[in-house]
Image (cartoon, rainbow, N blue to C red; front, side, top):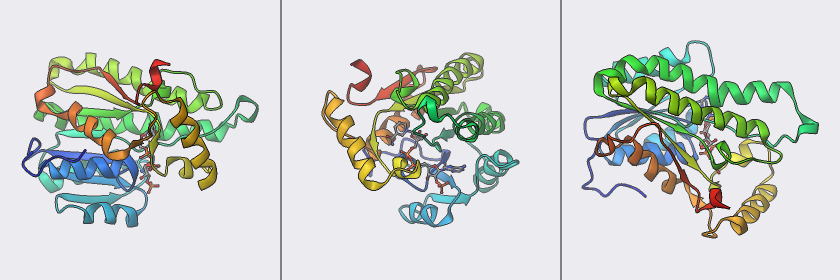
Length: 255
Ligand SMILES: NC(=O)c1ccc[n+]([C@@H]2O[C@H](COP(=O)([O-])OP(=O)(O)OC[C@H]3O[C@@H](n4cnc5c(N)ncnc54)[C@H](OP(=O)(O)O)[C@@H]3O)[C@@H](O)[C@H]2O)c1
């Protein structure tokens, strides 16, 4: 849900949002900008990032692979050089993979962990000195399947379980510094994530239809509904919450 025009909760703040060219990342970048923050949107492809930046004057972008050597320095440096501070790191860039055990493939595992676990870790390390100065926040993206089993997706689920444990451990480590670390765990959300995982549009539609029938509220979330909770976890008014994983999945985790 976008902020109202009068909601300037993040006025003067600076946020980095990875994976800002599509889906949840784009919705988050726009929501932060509408709530007054300067936003650096990051992703590999410049074209979708340009579209995100066109949605609000407060959004600038950097096209880079967050898994590349030197990327964390480049990303954090770009935000701090532009605006002189950093308040929020949203580790949203991520990927999924359908991979039953019989088809276990080494490169797929390595790539999933590089993007979903290693890159957010190194970005967090680079952001930390700046977040200490602003009593800032890190919001990581997990999934319902970070704490529920996923047949046919064990390694995706394992990366998100790692994200949840990093969230809790970092929160404990950094609490005394005033840096909060939380995670949002979406359930099935209508984005291009399944297309990016190699599914055809028909297969993705079938998957969403199957999931919708299982979700207690009988609906698939929109990206803006997840962005709403990402902003709530970053909101200074929520300063007493740290180390939490908020699941936003229409009750799917409960069944
Ligand atoms: N949609 C869901 O149902 C769902 C459910 C649970 C959790 N999640 C999580 O939510 C997050 C966002 O997912 P989404 O659904 O919005 O997916 P998406 O539309 O596929 O977005 C992922 C974004 O990450 C960027 N990205 C991928 N690899 C990158 C890299 N190496 N360096 C920089 N950027 C990279 C992509 O842009 P480029 O290709 O241009 O780099 C893309 O904009 C992910 O962490 C995902 O696991 C999604």
